[in-house]
Each structure stands twice: as C-alpha cells, then as structure tokens.
Length: 393
Ligand SMILES: *Cc1c(COP(=O)(O)O)cnc(C)c1O
Image (cartoon, rainbow, N blue to C red; front, side, top):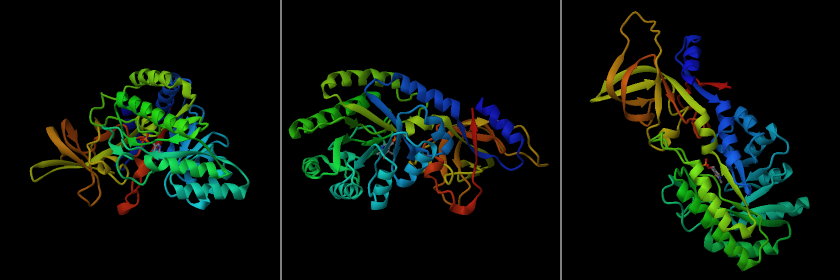
C-alpha cells in the first residue's frame, strides 16, 4: 500500500522525491493493541522526544494514558493538543523557568534528577504555595546487558546513583513542598529482548520496595521508563510484546503487595513503525571497488543510522519513468552502500546491502523511521531542501 502511495506521489512531482510518510492508522492500531494488552496496574505514556510531530501527538491523545516531556517546549507541545492529559516531566538540567512552567501547566509527576534539583523544585513549589508530586530518578548500579544505549549502570549524567538515594529520601522528608510518590528507573534504550526487560522491571520493584520498607515511605508509582526497542538489523525479529506481557504478569503478581502503579514511558516502540523515510536515488557510482547509491536526502533528514553507525533497513520502490535522452544508471545483483547528499563521508544510511536491481530514479523506502528520525536530525546542514511530510490514514 505504502509503495503505491509513494509511486503516485512521485508521479505528481518533477523534482527528486524525498519525504517522511506517517501512517496514522498503523500508529493507532499498534498503540491500541499495546493498550489493550497492558495489565491493569500499568500505564503507558508516550515519550515525545522520539517524535513530537503534532499529527502524531493528536492521534495518540485519545489512546495513551499520557505523555512524557523532557523540556518546557515539549510540555507546551503537549498542552497545545490537550489541556488536561497527564504529563510526566523529566530530564537533567531543568531550569527554574522550566520547573515553574511545568508546575503552571500542571504536570502530574516531576522526575527529580539530583539533590540540587530537589532543593530547587521544593523552593519553587514553596513560592507557588503548592506541594509538587515527584519521583526520584535512580541511576541503578546495573543496567540491562543487551540494550543498545545505557543510561544507568555506567557513569552518566542521569538521575542519582543508588547509593545516594537514601540521603535524597531523608532530604525529601525534611522538605514541605515536595511529596515523594515513587522512583523513576529509565535506564536503557533499544532493548529488543522481552525477557531481560521483564527482569529489569522485577529489579526496579525490588529496589523500590527495599527503600519503601527502610524509610516507611508511602509510594504509588514505579516508573520503569522506556527503552523497548526496534530490531533494525533483522526486522523480522522484533521485541515480542506478547511474551513480555506474560512475563510482566508474573512480575506484577510477585509484587502485588506493593500496590504500585507501573508507568511505562516509551518513545521508540510507539512511533517507530508508523514512519517511513522515502528518498529518490540520484546517482549510482563505483569508487575504489565499492558501489555507492546517492540519494536525495540523507542524514540531515534521517540521522539515526549515521548516529548509531548502523545500516538502516530499506526496500526499493521501482519508478518506471526516465526523462533523459541518455542511459539510465542501473545495477543488478550488486552490494551497495547508501549515501546521502551531504559533503561528509559520515552521511551513510546503509552499508554493504545486496540488491537485485536498482536504477537512478527508483525510490528507497526506509522503514521504522517514525522515531528518532526527523526529530534528531541536523536539518540545516548544507541548506538542502527539507523533505515533504505526508500523513496517511
Ligand atoms: C528518551 C527517554 C524515554 C524514551 O525512551 P525510548 O527508548 O524511546 O523508549 C523515556 N524516558 C526518559 C527519561 C527518556 O529520556
């Protein structure tokens, strides 16, 4: 279906094709499925930094429990689509203006990342005469072994290391304008293994319960973060949600006594699959024994593969039309590297991929481009035109 849509969009255009395409019905279907299978004590929030496109946010508002924001700008984007939907606010280095703004917008939970920030949040809440609900962000001693990016278990700027949590708790207990509701454990990105993810949730429960008991805390929330991944290398082997939910049910049963609500704040896993980046092949050439396919577009639109130095999966959409009076560049049964139009050797989207047939003028369709694609890219580098953005139902 998406192939035919791209072919007909291309027919209407003279210039080389370059676009992001978001399939909103696919997004709704996917997230409805997640929500439909989520255990009762769980809540699913969308971490909007993965993609804060307005149309995607609008599509998600009626489906998810809420959104996770990492800046005042993100909070404003959320409030522009819904005045009331619950917002979780996290991220390192929050400014006084951001914290005050977040309180004015009525964020449900504020994730506190350091002892200094704890003091600042309490100070601002006192000025406003309110009590702010908070979670303390924990930087665990161990992370999940096979996740691609680790925010915990290794030295990072996120949260407070486990050993410092007791002193943060005792500080909270001395402050009058913050109320501790639980802990926040976002620790990884792109974990494609449901078993280790469920084990991680179990570990978070154990850690929070230990502190609760020791400090006689009254806790309601366990935020286990996001980090559920996409397998970009073998797209047929994705995170097995059904298997994860089964394992999660066991973990929840084991910790039923806690009464915690479990918050998930997923980005990648929610919007990745609904997005496509389509880019026309401008040139095909051989240099020093390798075949390069140069596309209209590149890492300035879709930085994810270059940022992670990985090959991004794509399919080829054949375009029959050829307008020039000279021969069309064409290769058969060749291994290609896909490069963008930027003047840097880092502008590579896929490396050493076998293709059966490819011609200049065909279109490459990159799949799983809906998260950390356009949102993380350096759009102005080289001042090429931006891609078009299409939303299909
Ligand atoms: C980025 C981020 C998320 C979302 O991570 P994904 O890997 O996209 O699921 C969730 N929580 C926090 C605190 C984050 O920084």
